[in-house]
Length: 392
Image (cartoon, rainbow, N blue to C red; front, side, top):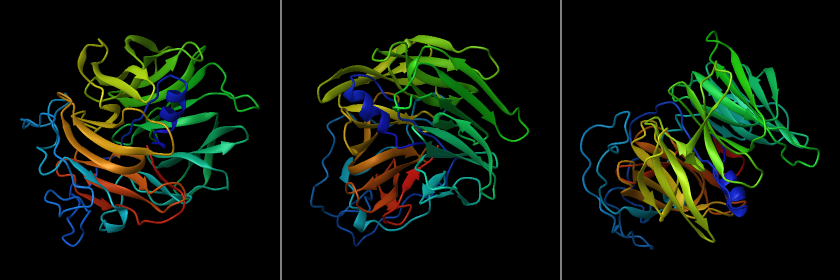
């Protein structure tokens, strides 16, 4: 995955829509440990008093029942303690490293593979793993290209114009999207959507979709690739569905302005947008039936099982988001809200969320692991300066 708020920032400013999604291999289930000596964090289920006192949500927090399944019916477990807390990076204990792919400096780490260094000196926009290969989107001229790297860091393929990557939860397949740009950096119409299987499972397939703009990959789930795009440069967008091997993508007109797609056949949709505010809805896919709406937060992603919605501020613009939120996908109930400065919010598994957090531009950053059920957090990477990115 990428710096997930990037497209939201750009398109909110243009009164359009963006996508924030995420995914990765299932991770270690042990949650962050509480630090009894910290007054602000880690955020355990029974935190000590903090400078900004956690407040109880007025939202209905009825106890979920059952076990998460392919339907967004039940979150991981019932929230305990305050549901709103503030993260103090300097007071978090170190914990287990991220169990999904991430970038530290120029080295791709985590997930199912050895550390791989991305060659060159150009900016790295996104990273992922598929099978035994590592993928890295890097800057090239006025646009980008995607490097495919073997386990030794050798470049085995270069794919021009790629801007985004999503992967399946098991890491056995990836989708990526390419859009050509002019010498000025301006986007041109049309997009190429690629589907890549792990070694020996079918190679790379692609389709060219002409005359679309603002293409954003949403998910690769249940053998289908979902992407959002508009037919005019500044117009509203619609969700597309492509099954690799088919000659064209289907347009799902019932899912406008898609924000994210889950494995439970639901999608976040930007319902309304105004100055400094928005409302988003959870819709069924492909029918577009609205399950619930929130005007308190903006839907940005889902846990792999689709039972928990990841969300952020209802208006996203600027360096980073001021909050990261998890909601019960069944009814939109608030499970936990963390405050801080977050550039990415990505599920590590059905129980944990990874947050790329810092205290502002040019300050030390860390990938923070937070447990959905308790709100407790820990440092998954050391707090330090240098490039840091959560992968697809």
